[in-house]
Amino acid sequence: MVELFVPIAAFMMIVLVVSLTTRLIATGMLNRTIREAMRSDPGSIPLLAERLDSRQPWGDALLGWIFIAFAVALLLLGALETDPERQSDMMRASVVPIIVGITILLYTRFARPKSG
Image 1 (tube, helix red, strand yellow):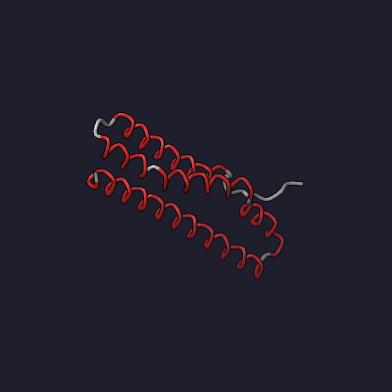
Image 2: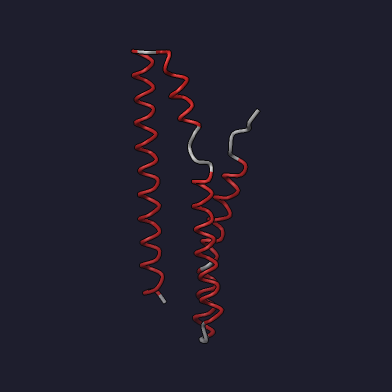
């Protein structure tokens, strides 16, 4: 069972780290551009500030849905398993991605900026 979960978990961690690192670098570059614009051309700041809020609202939610899809796949694999011990292992292994996915979706739902 471990030979199935370790590569999948390693792949998901790598994807998550790359995704969050690229988002961090992009935000840092934009913040540096805004600081430089404040010194040289303060009139361009509103255009740059709009880019801070223009991040795709579905980006974080997509990550939550990916975790939930992974958990559903584990549940289906567990349901198709004939060995009861392996079946219960698969069912237990699906709990963590379900909790993480639901937590991310709840966070994106309640932490989004209120419009108007």
